[in-house]
Length: 221
Picture: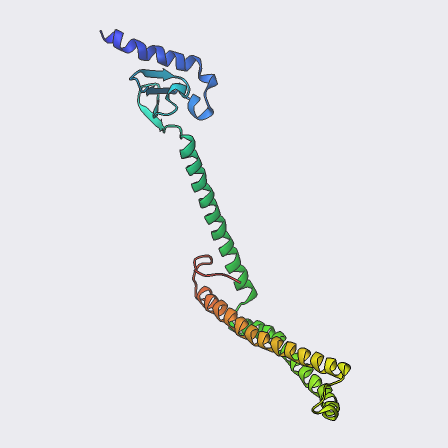
């Protein structure tokens, strides 16, 4: 009776040993055996993954019959699509994390201390202030250009202005308004630049104090 029970296992072991050359490198060593139970209850054994059990768990046995590993069921098309989507998401998150680390380190290399950061802030603000000064000077020039036009318009008080004079006054008005719009935009830019440097400085202070790069929330300039 014992010989009858053991004979199938011995035959399987012999088959595995005879065909071990066809196994993957990780499975070929020592005569690995693949076994599974089909949906209709049949127990199958092979020296390689069993096609009939692709959708079922397969067990990998050592030559002595002990369990070496378990191969999970193959994924369905829907499961594979979901799995690949998860892998893409994880890869994107890893890439974002690596990018955050890189940017934090670059930020610390650019600004070794707070005085260095303040110099950069002053330079950025100075560019905007210079633009504002240019616009203000242009408004003063336009006001000077407007005065003789207004003086000439006095001669036509209560009458229609000559087309050329009216065109010159309208052009002067439009140019002055354009410069005022520029100044408003430049004032808003001063606020934006200051806010950006405030946020950046707060981040740098935490990094300078020892917080690991890439672990802080919020954007990095």
